[in-house]
Length: 264
Image (spheres, helix red, strand yellow):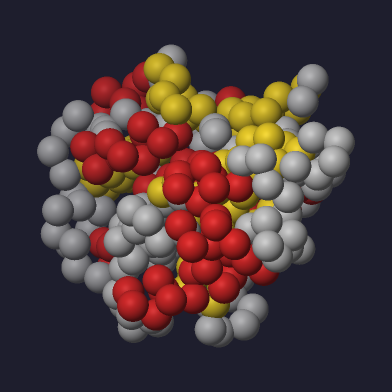
């Protein structure tokens, strides 16, 4: 069955068109086009918007705004977003990174969506045509969302304050066994004063490792200092099972890789 594609100059008009039954928004196409090609008969039409703001990156005063149509390749090559280069390059190979968008990554089911893990650690705000939602709330309710994501925004972490790790069995562009992103603030003696840790593949969408975060506060990033956080890393997780790895395996290796990330 042929798919009808409608292109609109504004997000407002595209949102209106999405109210039609069977329509899906087309960003980079790495999710929706594949679903259609694999026989998803619920998709009968595609909607896209060429509004310029969707494809812009703005960095000023330590604040970042990334349009939802910005690709992983654009993020990886942006001189002021070097902290996110590793996370952006974790998404597929070069061809995929030239198509995959920030907005699409927010909807990618595990084991995909590695960049959304990074955005969760960064405490990003997701904008949907004038409405701003904390990313944790957005991810929890994304299955029922029909509004077009227009941008994500966040504060750049301090130098060395953001860490990202993707673990895969196929190098260099295999899908994730798991992914971890973390943002820390430390006082002058190295003690952790705040922490946000986000996990990928530990549920059907990215989630916070809240128990591990709490266990890090007031401690230093040493082998002994992080031990309570590693012990708590599995609290509240529900890892996926797929052809890459079982839920049991993912849960078993999570503390190992979290420890490596924290001690980097």
